[in-house]
Image 1 (spheres, rainbow, N blue to C red):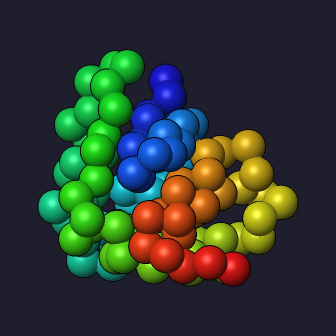
Image 2: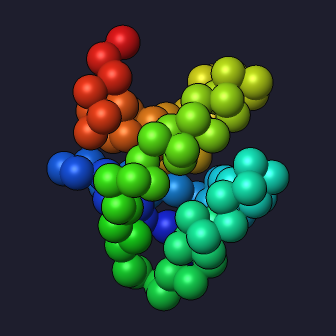
Length: 93
């Protein structure tokens, strides 16, 4: 199963495993409502993020990538999610 998350003009497609790990990381960061958004997704549906959710989600994703490494996450969709969030929030690197 693939979980699709829309950030502005980007749609990141996360593997099921990456989606589950992201939900766990969001829960650990105290972001239960954001984690719940990904738990209730129907097959083939796209999760659209509220602007207010993008910064805390990016913070969690940046920490994850920093600890795990881009190479380990390259095929999971997490890097695409990070790029979409950065673009939406104007965080150019």
